[in-house]
Length: 410
Image 1: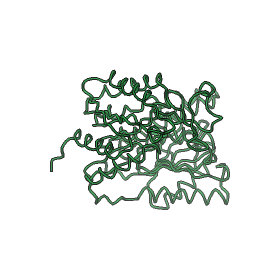
Image 2: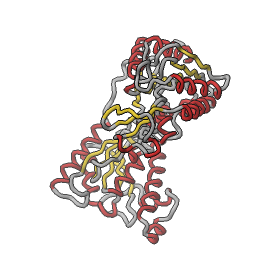
Image 3: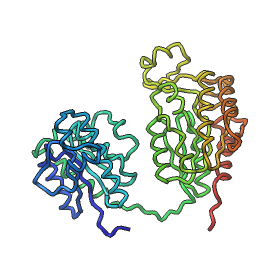
Image 4: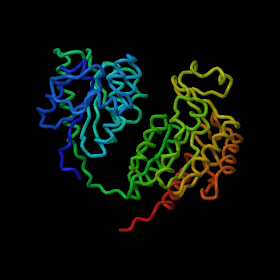
């Protein structure tokens, strides 16, 4: 373990915003913290404070020389290079256990580079970005990271009475967040990841109750794309003992370009990490779109349902279910750890129940048969004569998951 004190990392373009970053640095130092600085500005640096990683080092880490970036005058390309370079530097600092928090500031370019760099900082290390575009949709840039955005109100272009207040507050925030300690007196048997949707809430709630009774901590992830990505990322960070993937609906959105896709890597992290998992084709009866008028033209004649004014669900058909079953099976076939798939024969979502708007036993049957046809012998498929939200199905899920998990030796 390193004896070097951990530092607050400052990320930013010191060539154009040196004065503001100098003030930020002084505010952090006044809190008694150590500071590390990374200059991501292409055109130069600052003489107002010591810079630990200058722009030429950052550029080289990103694969190019700073001279070439200046000569080319391609702003977008330069941002990518500097973002990638800074991220590589940060990854090394994290591996050396030298960072306790990170903060950056900027406009559009500075925000992009800061958020890119922060992707290398794991969950639990606080991250703050003071930005002129904090109120815009930055979901893609933030990804699944625990980054706090603070609107700068005015441009981060020089010290004034407004920016000084916000910078001082941001500095105080990152210092306080970096020194938070969590009471870990409660000892859990392990931590379980579980995926949920409004259409599977009853099942998830019951499973959570049963697992907590067994002493497990349960972390639920909303399967909206961002939720699935966050769950997969934390699985790869070693947070969980096992996975109960009840709501794999993001696979359907990825197939049909819905708004809740978690990308093609969904349902792969537990396999890569060798974690026991129980998987359900929950909510694979639906694809998510926004308002009705946003549904792609090719799907206008499909079975659509307005779940909310800004959420339109499309019922998956037999052809899509054949592909989804194959995809799910092929992903799980690669696992070296114990895996089970449980099939709720009476419906896979709240609205896929007898009398429900998406009730279609024939389409579900195609999905189930596709899973069974493509799964290998190492993965057990269990059919349960129940609806996904029936207590008996939740009980079967938990019982199976506990069977797959290694016995803890006291």
